[in-house]
Amino acid sequence: MRAQQRCLTVFAVAMGASAVSFAGLLAQDAPPLTLDEALSTAGVGNPEVRQAVNQLSLNEPERWNFLFGELMPSVSLNVFSTGYNGNLQRRATDNFGNPIASPTADWVYFSNTQQSLSLNWQIQGRSIFNAVDRREQTVNERELALDAARWSLGTEVQQQFFEAQEQQELLDVERSLLDGRRVDLESARLRFEVADASQVDVLDAEVQVTQQEITIERQRATLEQALLQLRQTLGGEEVAAITPQPLPVFDPADLDEETLIRTALTRNPDLQAAEVDLRGARIGVRESNEAWWPTLNLQYNFSRTSQDTETQALLDFSYDEQDFGSRFFVQLSVPAFNDFFGMRQQQASSRVQLANQEVQVEQQRLQVEVTVRAASSALRNEWRTLQLADRSAEIARRSSELAREEYRLGLRTFEELQTTVEQEATARRQALASRYAFVTALLDLESVVGVRLRPDGLVGVN
Image 1 (tube, rainbow, N blue to C red):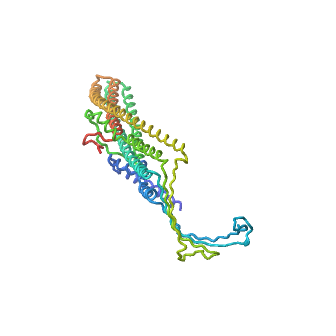
Image 2: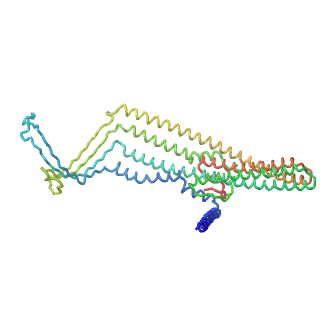
Image 3: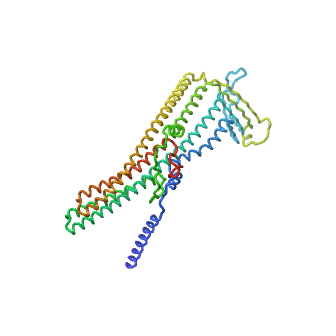
């Protein structure tokens, strides 16, 4: 019996290990994520975009509510109401209206059944036109919020995708540097075997190999963190690896700064939001200025009522023309005298809000112009830095090759070799960082301008 249990336990463990291995194989076989796939996935799964899309679903119900709540009369329908009541009156009045004791102080019971239909329509000045403008304002705000969320998301996804790609390329650089360290170790061993170098060189070379392996492990962890950040932005989509994309690197000399500013003043999402808020403040001023206008209230009521003693009218649906009645009511009121100083205070508050919003728009326009100029200057600086970094990396590579050859020939010490190798490693890392710093600067400029600025053929143009 125990032998059978042990067999079952071993079988279960084996099956579990097989399942884990199979899941690992599936994860490894998953195709790497491209940038276009990341943008498409984020457009569907990103929480902020999903919330903005959900807000648009309110437009249709609000449209019907506006149609039947503002433009059309409100309808109140009483399909059926019936009741049974009792009343005891111990006091009455005589023919002259004086209170006297009721000659028949007894309970009186009666019942009633009623149906009614009421129409009510109220308007104050130009309130309907203000309501139309206010509804259009709300729709524009939601659509603009969705566009801004999608635009911001596109920039964020690209930034995180290229960040992960940078960490992947940096991992490849560290691995190639490890290969060079191993070549140095092999050279040190060969020179030690022929008594042309001390064992210290061999030990130092082994230390350099170990330190480079530590750097690779740390870089692998950094890459995993970048992929996790990208996964969060995509809405939880699994990202095991990415497919490297060509970097949008180009000479920005053709980007005219004044043209970029004019484009940004019409396409910048933050400026568009501020201008929409300005239109809302103007509507608020109109609403407050027209609050004193006369209010017209129209009512029409059509009802059918059946009343009788005891329970005669209870649940009475019989037809009787005398039971029908209609009522039409017109009222014109002037609310300006109800809260005169309160309305003046509201008008002043709305005007101040409008003035502050105008200042906010002016400040936002100035901020956009300053940001475009700063981002454009930063992009040009990154381009010049990139040219110097690439040239420095190429020189360092050639210097490292010559230094390794001289060390093998005994013309250079191990310390001198490592100094040159470290210079190459630093130059290669700087060159890689400069390329992605240019991409980051480009994304920052595109984010404030509101359009993609890349020449045709470069990734992420649309």
